[in-house]
Image (cartoon, rainbow, N blue to C red; front, side):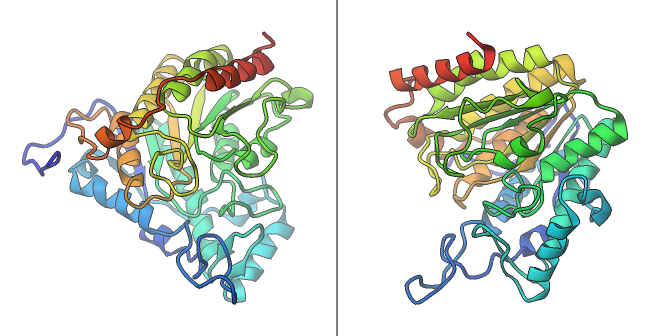
Length: 378
């Protein structure tokens, strides 16, 4: 077996904050089957966005002995008044009403339970506590393992299993509380980070980057022509990759576009809305990443953060629907963030690495160059 518990403690080179709560796992996505409400043609079942992937990731962090090396940060619910920095009160009242009625569809096939609004407040509050810990120097970086996710949440619309814009609200908080003038986001969820894009589309102080499977979700969203508007023109970057992209395409996109864009922007802090649904075992995407690809990507972002941000990096957990594989992908990110000396050997990696098609293909290279030209004007 590739993993056995060891008596020797792990050592780390960075102080990584770890935010989670049992209540995050109590967000109830009802008995929807996949993402459809039960009916006479859809048998009741389990929603894709269920607690198991996150609970198992937290369990793997414990089982590998990494947890004692992390710095626990206890989340607290955010005040509703702060949520109006992004979401109008009418939308917040809508969410509360749906939850108060016992739960149901909050919009765009996003189910909620009776306590989901309060748990969403706790998710945002966890991000804000992570921001405080990073910017006061209590930790070097932080990972927020929260539910519900947030990168699809629009100001006035629940979407894609997301209720409140977790990372975007964290960015607003960092701007207002700590006076940060330039913040970048790197979103590698397999679905386009449309909510984050919409919130900062005309804001020149926030560089929003999204790598995603081309035209997967939301439909007709995340195209290379979407580069911002008004004062924010040129600070929104989309990299839609062809279905089936693996290590070669993602690493090429980083080298050709993501890293040069970050270097040019010189952010003072970086947020990573981190979804793991671009993994090879995910049921909602058809990309081919392994845990080692996520480890490689976060390493590149950490190096940029070290150069420009004094290491300030906050990761928010987004999508990822393989209960089997999300824990290994997430663990790789947290291990790299903390600089742990004894990493887990992913038992699935050899299998995934053996898939054909990981090398950069012609259509993938063409898509990357098109995204590069659209953003850099080359």
